[in-house]
Image (cartoon, rainbow, N blue to C red; front, top):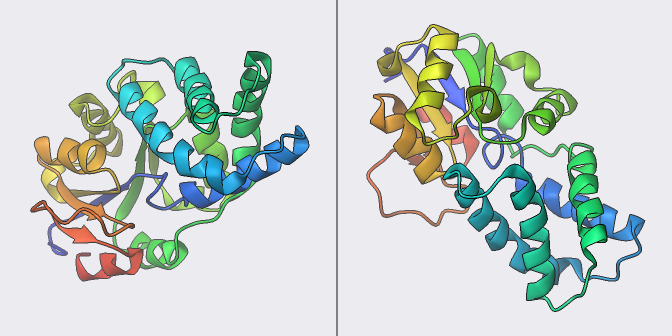
Length: 228
């Protein structure tokens, strides 16, 4: 595989950028700023699966960006039986995006693997995240310079796993799918989506929970060296 791959495409959130850690720190900050007496661990326990559900609906075009931003907070507060007014939820949804990119923890080994790959392959990003936030994340985490192209779902008008976003990214990079690899955490959005158009794939199962598939799988970024 090392001899045939020329282009490596990364997902951003949950793959290079440690979304769970940065998101938790962001909620801790905005709850304090807005004087909300909410137990962070209790909130995050319900928020994370709710957020996952809303992102799946968003990928499937079943909710809008504004629905996602409001709904995931509203449902999480309801789940822990904390009453928060709609006006405050709207404020928090904006504050969350504003403050999220002030925390920029990457997964262990992210910089090392990018340094290892940068002279061997052309590196790219394909992300479903909100365009304004993704650009800031990469800039503030000092990784944007590693990537020749950055493809965002909002610029294409569709989201992974839609084949249009992968084809758009390949065309932008002037890359052939058989000479390209997609690395990401989402089995559905990243791996199955890329596989269907002929790309090589590497599933980053950072929680080490998804064993029941036949795709190449890693649980740490340093394992990428075994494939590239």
